[in-house]
Structures are given as structure tokens and as C-alpha cells.
Length: 600
Ligand SMILES: Cc1ncc(C[n+]2csc(CCOP(=O)(O)OP(=O)(O)O)c2C)c(N)n1
Ligand SMILES: [Mg+2]
Image 1 (cartoon, helix red, strand yellow):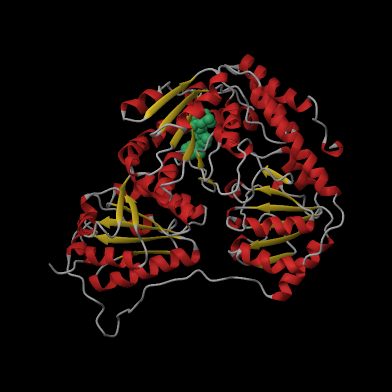
Image 2 (spheres, protein in one colour; image 1 turned 135 degrees about the vertical axis):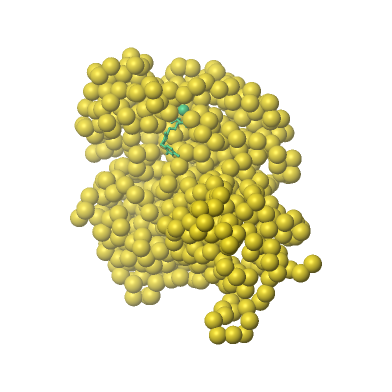
């Protein structure tokens, strides 16, 4: 049988190093699935329950491997389902290629079944490169360009293939005017600033007496360099959400997360520093950075468009984080004054005990912070952590003490619900020998993560290390937003939008061949983690958590406190328990060790 366009596509993807594709089939893309089948030894296909989940998986696969993520869907509804997952990759600067089917070329423009103008639909999310193929010889350069642009620019790209075209015989581009003759291959370049710019940066940093680092996903893989630079400068370091795994939390000068989900030491670090060095981060909330004029700034980012975006920097360096920091290090002088670092470290030590006290406060029935607090010392080596968007992202960001060799990610820029389980599944395909733990709210479970448990049940027996734990924060509430309604808007909880039905997730797990563990007493949390971590199959840990424990921001503004009071006065349906839960958490700030920044 002659090589079809579908066959050629698979062969070309393989030549580019693609070994795994996440997706869902349909008649608009059957010509490619037939080819995948014929070449099954070359590229593995992973079947998600929903195309959006396949796109999340492709994004997470790339995050956890550094390689291109690839997802595939049929025309019409399959392609439109991909979109949110693709935006997740787009907003986190992750290279993902989407391949979609399309109606046959004769039907296009005919208001045909499942016909969507996919190039227009995908134009924003895959704006770096989105093309619909119209002839067999065109497909070669479409693949080559889509992949090279995705990898080179860390963008989402898309190829739309009409279904009749997939079945045609492939033809190499003829040597004619109007033909394109492309090739395979791309290596990530070493990008380092010029010496003169490094010296300008060093001049700023060497003058700093209170240097703050902020590291993000761009600094993953540059742990040694970040530590060396921070040590030289006597700096403290905060971590943006996507940069959680850049620095281990057992270093005394690492202040942890920043922003609404951040810590008090990060707040102190930023509000009192005189110099800010930002590495590989697009952390969005400027109000958590130094005030303009307070600190001199240096930023390193591989993407020019991310420079001087959140804080006006004095020196803007385009470069790879590790390479640039390594080149910078010899130009940096040792800061003889250790008092700043000591101050930060004292604040960090106190903060960890505040977190412990908060986590151990009684709640009804279980304090959600205790779930992550108890997990920290139990985290197995090389674990990969994922979190959904919801209140658990607070506990993931603040309470989980990450160590070297671990990975962690979530839907950062898009902050989409529904990503934790598909991320965890992709982590398993990326590193089948690593244990994986996903933290998920019950709303996010119901949205789509529950369905993806079925994907885990389909594949887990092929994973050499079966440890795959989905921890559900079962609070029957869309809790993060409930608190936002109270604290940001000053509105009481709106039961109609916030309450969600009770589901026994542990029983669902058992129903599909996984292990389910129900946890409804605080003293069972630790043993339940032990149990789950030693299980011979994927586990759903169904923890009954208290929705009235507030995910407090590190610094409560007067306006937020006023809003909160107004929400309660307006008749919040859970007013009394909300006040009790909040008081317990807030009192912890006043108990031993809690002072104003100036006193720490
Ligand atoms: C796709 C999507 N829809 C809505 C939101 C807004 N949102 C953010 S967190 C949240 C509540 C999550 O509830 P749940 O999963 O139960 O976690 P909880 O906060 O209760 O722990 C919502 C609705 C979002 N981020 N993503
Ligand atoms: Mg919930």
C-alpha cells in the first residue's frame, strides 16, 4: 500500500522524536489514527476521556520532560474541546502541537456537519503557527514548521488536516516553483547575554544589601546556579507557583510561594528588599513585588516579551536561566553583611511553625492544611506533584515542603480547574518509575478529573511504579471562590453557585478497580498517606475537609477585612462557623512568634 498522508505524518512526527500522542479519535481524523495503528511500534497513543484532558496531558508531558507535547482530536467538537488545554500550554509558555481533523475539502464552506473554521478558532491560542493542509506535498513543511516553531518559541502550534487528504497518497514536494522543501531538526540554543550586559547586572546586584530573588518555571533545571548566586549575594528567594521545584524548601532562606497563595516571609522579602533579581518568572501580581522605586531590578528571561513587565527593571537580560546565572556568578561579589539573610531565615523558621500550628488547629471534620502538612515529611523521593485550581492550590503552594529531585506543576497562567489528574497521568507517562500525587478539589473532580481516573485505571498496570494518588479535598463547596466572594467582593456565600453535591470519591475509585480510602478523622490523615503510598495500585484519598478554614492571603488588607465583615453581616449562610474557622487561623498569627515585619 502506498504511503498515505496519514502515514507520512506519523513518520515525520517520529523523525522529530515524537514518541507519545495524547488524544481522542473521530471520523475527521481516522486517516491519521489508521496510520498510527499501522505504525504502533513507533508512536504510542494515549486515550484520554476528553480532548481538553488530552491537551492538558500534552502540556504537562512537555512540562515534565522538556520535550514537545502532542495532542490529537477529530474535527468540530473534538477540536473545540482541545482549546482550554491548549491555552494552558500557551499561558505557561509550553511547546505543544495540536493535530486536528477537518471535514473533507469538497465539503468545506458548505455548512457541513462538524464543520468549524478551525484555523480561525485556533488562531489565538496557536497564533504562532496554525495551518490547514490542502495538498499532500504541503504536509511535510507544515509538520516541520509547526514543530520547530513550537519548540523554538515555546508556543502552541496546530495543523488541521481535512479527512479526505489524510487518505491520499503522500507525494514529496515536486521540484517546481511554488514548492517548499523543508527539513527535520532543532536544538535548543544556548542563550547568554553579552558580557557588558552581565557586568551592568552585576554592578546593580553587587550594590544590593538586601537582595531578593524571585524564581519561576524558567529557572527549573538551574537549581545549583540559583543557590550559588543567592549565596554569593546573601539573598533570600521566593518562588512563583510554577517555580516551586526550583529550590528545595529546606534551605533556610527560601521563603516559599508568593502572592495570594504566598507566605509571610515572601511578603517580608519583597516589601523590604533593596534589589530584586527575577529569574524565569512571569508572576502576575505586581502588588506583591517591591513598590516602584523601592528596589533596583535585574531580570533574566528567555523571552524578551516577559522582561520589565511586572516591575520596571534596570537591567533586562535575555538568556537561559542556568547559563546566564553561571556567567554572572564570577562577576558577583560576596556580600559580607549576613544580617539580611539571617532576618529572612528567622522569618522563615517562624513561618513554618505558624503553618504547623495552623495545620493542627481542629476543624470540622478535617483541617485541609493538615492534609498537605502531613504529606510533606512523607513525600517519596522523586515524587511528581500536581495540583488543581481551588483552595488546595493554597496548601500545595504553602505547606508542601519540596525537596531536591522532585517535580511539581499545575495550570499556572490559565489557572484552570480540571488539570490535576490529567497532569498526573502525563507525569506517569513521562516518568513511569516515579510516584505521582495529585491534589484536587471536589468541584474539580466533578468537572472532569473523575472521568480521568478511568484513564488511570486503563493504564496503571503498565506503570512500573504503581504509586499514583489522587487526594480529593471533599468539602462540598467551590471553596476558593466562596472565599473570594467573601473577602474580595464582600458578598456572603451564594449557596446556589457554591454548594456542590456530595460524591463518595473513594467508592467511585473502588468501582473502577482502584483503591479508595475515606478519611474523616484528623488523626487518620497521616496513616492514610502511609497507606496510600504503600499501595500496589492507584489510590483515591477522599478527605472530608472543612470549607470554613480560610485560604488567607499572606497580608490582609483593610479592604479585605472590611469585605469579610460585610459578607458576614449580610447574612453568610455559614457565618458562625466561618468566623470560628477564621478566628482560629488568624489567632495563630498572633500567638508566639507572630509580630509585625519590623520586629522579625
Ligand atoms: C475551568 C474553570 N472554571 C472556573 C474556575 C474558577 N474557580 C477557581 S477555583 C474554583 C473552585 C474550585 O472548587 P473545588 O474544586 O471544589 O476546590 P475547593 O476550592 O473547594 O477546594 C472555581 C470555580 C476556574 N479556575 N477554572
Ligand atoms: Mg471543593
